[in-house]
Length: 134
Image (cartoon, rainbow, N blue to C red; front, side, top):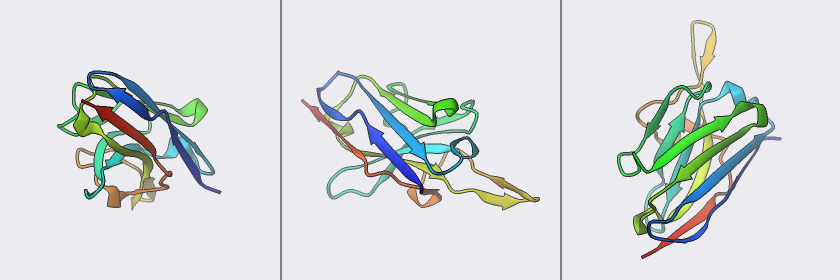
């Protein structure tokens, strides 16, 4: 059974930091690129960051670049998002998900690309709430 659980959210003042965790089970974590997304009330879910299977490639939304750092530990099936210098506009529910593979030349590829679109991801968790007060 596929399960993805996000944790680490909370209430923090502007300028503060939080570290989110995403723990996966029920699928081969190290076969998938992974991504972080967020959604605020009344807004569409947006891509925040993604990381390749090896961890060697990462991309960030312009709004978080330089403040957030994504990482993963394949041995523990876990992904992280270190969020520093938080702003009120970072408030939302944060989700993690796995990049849907595409098939080419007999191989399935799950990729982290510059365009982090929710419809390219699967295995969604329930999310963790992040609230940044001004």
